Length: 246
Image (cartoon, rainbow, N blue to C red):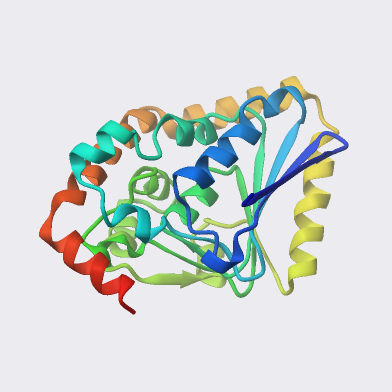
């Protein structure tokens, strides 16, 4: 199992726990997340997502996408509707990010309502370095936070930003100096929010998302197919194999 899950006092805590692979996301990993979140709204008022001290999640597992083509990704429904379940969770989501939130890991954090980061956190979309692009919502979600110009710079360059810059860009709401402080802050905030009216929380989240996300889900679906189309390019094949030989 790569995911730990518990519920305490209406707060669901989902911990990505595959440190050997820096919580790199693959189909099985996403299925585990999906299984825990399938009916989470019936059990909790707030969801908190943590990684490990080594990484929140360092992107999609390159070993899995190395063999994928556009057609195979479509047939397999590679990280498809089960990822959309994460985007459609109706209760507030808080992500506590340490070290690397890259690629799909960054997209998972961006799918949250609130991100709290350790000062050692790094955020970025390195997909372009593999001849790919974000495919789990990154182009849509990041642009809605930082604007098209900054999103273009970050996604097209593949550069990482640290927690301080992420705070300046309004990607994260708070930066803490240690792992213990991060977890304490995230859980205290979750407990505070969980005490509020569940109906109010859901409607507040829906209203905020409506202001930001009109057309977003359709954009993500388009983005996903563009992402898959890159699986068949020579750039992707050459660069992923080069990466795996390191």
